Length: 203
Image (tube, rainbow, N blue to C red; front, side, top):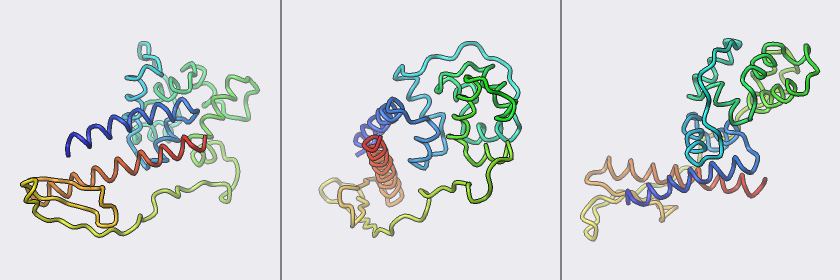
């Protein structure tokens, strides 16, 4: 069963790449699958060779709230620029100037990307729009309630944890905790893959 989870995780990483190549940003991909670690998605893109390796580290200055957002996402500003193919200093200048201080197309591209990925933060940072314009997450509402069955499998010689309503989701382990943990992992990765497939189909 562990092999199945590994294979599905590999498929999930491939789906990150497909979604990115379909035009979705890393932040959009992460939000669709309710995933907070954008660094993991970024590493998958780097390993697949669809984003370039970063050059030497550069110093930059950003609004503190934006810096804190990147830290929380485990994803750096330089990586964000890299996935959007922005020159770091251009992006830094655009963000610090804001939408009212520039007509430069390169700066406007950066600000459009920032607004797309961090809509509410953008509105707050530049004091634009109103409360009705704010976007709120819709994908983290309580999910369906499932029935879980844990029983000893004579055939496999271990405990098996199954979602009764989704019989193809089965985790196995030497004890209840291990079986339940693997079942949860299998359920979560399959759910993320399905969301990515739906995203790509709608692109």
